[in-house]
Image 1 (spheres, rainbow, N blue to C red):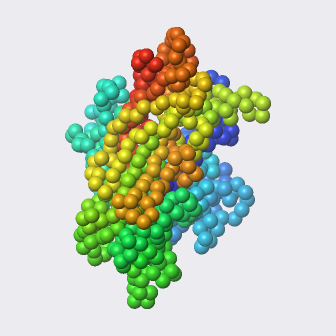
Image 2 (image 1 turned 180 degrees about the vertical axis):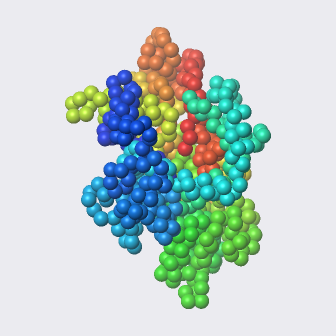
Image 3 (image 1 turned 90 degrees about the horizontal axis):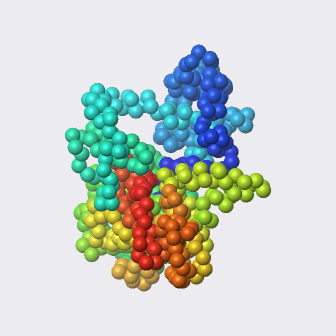
Length: 576
């Protein structure tokens, strides 16, 4: 599933390649002086900060509270009242602000009473105004109230943080045997230190963990209240037809079975299961809005389980870990467990652990889990998969300096994008295979190695700018006897809404097949154009991050020459 939050991040990353984005403000020496000066000139000259711009006029305010009160009194727009009346979550409110700004910019009326919720569109997850501090502060007051309600010991937290005041990344020794610190690891005195490249150590307090997990879950499930996300997923024919074929074309598996659908959304997979002849379908959905939607759709299609419709499908509005509080269901009573749980880079969103919980709690011994395998692959990509070609020739002008800066940024941040197979400079390599029928929950965190070999048909060295990750999920003949199938997100197959996950090296590695390298004396560092590597050895770690539903990916690359000499590059850590 592609969460709205990730969609927003993806849009922001891709926007680096747009010439109307923040790069337009940098000066030749790389600083932001002109931009900062512009901000100061917008102020009232008294040295005070006026960070928040009114939604309707040019007035500036020092706090969100003052801004919203001004909007209520002067423009008859009660932001908090609208949020409360329409029960808008964080993401819907985020989109509402961008919608209002876009309407005002076009001199259009703002109608928040429109039952069609015109702002409930994914395009409003992209900031209308890039420097809009309101977008990241409008919920601060609510968070402070929650902290007070839960009795958060803020003074104690500050004391703990003070003890770590001088800690920096240099204080943490990192070597090739270090694995990522994840949220499942124990804390020392209630604190976890998470280190990332070129960053100060981040500190996570266990006393905040419960509230943070709850908040992340609320935002996560709330993000799936957007119909745009469900349209995108259902419109993904590779995805939807793989599940449809697995459910409808394996009658010996589905006929008369009890089926559980974890994270049902609109209920499309549950509808397929009912259509296939299941005797009972339990559709589990944590989003309150989408649970109601799935119920209405089931009733409209006459498969809902009630006295009026006499169908087989029932909807439980619950996290699967709390399912027993919502419906009556016996442990190990499910014949088929189905879920579309995959996120970007396969494991983003950490929904797999919920599916494994459902498997262990509700699935009969020997029952089927769909899909039953998941496999991650990796390959190296070349210049064509970056923004360098675009910036190298912009209507005849050389803007490659922008392309280089964008590439430096992507060496710190993972990018989700569709990569063409023609832009790969190595063959694919297997990174990790999961057997979903037998794997343990802690196997979600792993460290694996892979070797990237150049494409044999190449006649010259090529620069490998980084690696691309993708996954396949299998509905194998272990359970799908009549019609096994595979859902692939590979660059070699039609694109899906998952696209691929791109991790960019800090420095490109020159690579050439043995046929090009043999018989020539090579001088210079391995991986340079003077001495291309014959292969790249990777060590990749994936772990659940300290922030709930996020993952950390560490990447180590070693260039290997034709005669076995090696050159290692520094470890890179990405957070998704």
